[in-house]
Each structure stands twice: as structure tokens, then as C-alpha cells.
Image 1 (cartoon, rainbow, N blue to C red):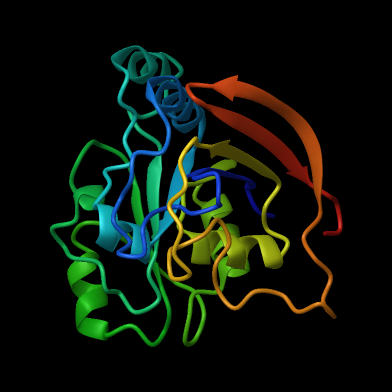
Image 2 (cartoon, rainbow, N blue to C red):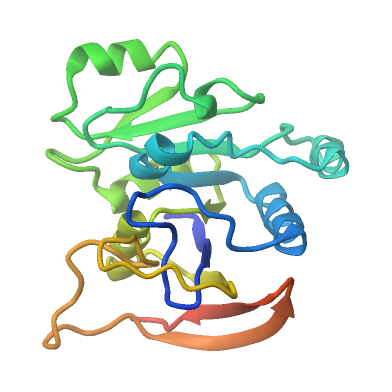
Length: 227
């Protein structure tokens, strides 16, 4: 068993998540920020890859006090669990995600991660070892389900999103398309990694909705069953 997995991302009109320098860029506006906060508040856990942590140092907490209060009224913690996929345990023990806000933290590593770093992280997070050289995402999702995660929100980056999608581990996508063009062949996109060849089956999406938001467009898809 695994959680229901939904991806949320903001990209430029040309499909970039940030600049070639991998520095965070403001793509959406206040309306989308509130939407993302609501999605986060409704999730049991929020997952990012180590690249996102190293580039942006996010806390991944719920920002609106009313949403925090609603979670607590439902008997949940103030914030969803925070999950970092970090095969080699590169995360700093000072990272915001390990310290800001209450709640469970999970750092997923591979067997190849240095033992001393894994031991140091155990003071701040639950360390899940899944996979030999890189994190086995299917096994990780099973472990998260065992920890009580039923709705998992994935917030990036492109390498993690691509790996989950091509492994058939994504159920829905929410994508805000902003009114800017960033450009750059080295700039990260919604789905990075090695990519699929023309001989492989692509990940197919079923259109759900599209609506204006701020100065951009919010598009929602479901992943086709069997895709």
C-alpha cells in the first residue's frame, strides 16, 4: 500500500521551475500561495528532493494560522510531516525543514549514505533507508504509508517529480503556469532526470480543469491508470 500522491508545482510559460543557477524565482502570486497553503494543510506529508532543500532551504510548514488551527481541531499536528529524499544524506543538520514547526520529519536515504551522517540525522528526523545506491521511491512510499501517511504532496524538484511519475507513483498534478519566460537549456523543468525515449510509454494525463489564477493559469490533471 502507498499514499495518494499529488504533485504541486509552479513553472514559467516555457516550463522552467527556476533559473539555470537553480535560484528560487517568484513565478506565481498571492492567490496561488494561498492555494498551495490549503493543499499543504490538507496533506499528511509534504515531500521534496534534496536539490530543493539545498537551493531554497524551505520549511514546508503551513503558513495561515486559521489552517493550522483547523488541523489541530481535527486532532492532527500543526503541520504535515516533512519528507526529504536524499540518497547520499547531503542535507545539513541546520536545514530549516528539520527545525521549523512541529511534526514528523523523515529523511529518506540509500544504503550508500555515510553511516555517520545517518546517525547525526537521527537526532532531528526519522531516517528511512530504502534502496542500495539511490532511494527506492516505491519502497519509501510503502514506509510512509506504514507511518500513517495517506495523502502525500510532492513539491519538487524536477528530478524527483520525473522519477515518481515514470515509476507510476503519481496520481494527480497541479501545475501553475506563470506569465514569465525564463529560458536556459540547463534550467530545471517540471520533469528532469534522464527522460523517456520514444520507444518507452509516456506518462499520460487526463485533463481535469484549468482556471485563471493571479496572472497565470492553474491546470489540474489526473494520471491515467496504468500510465
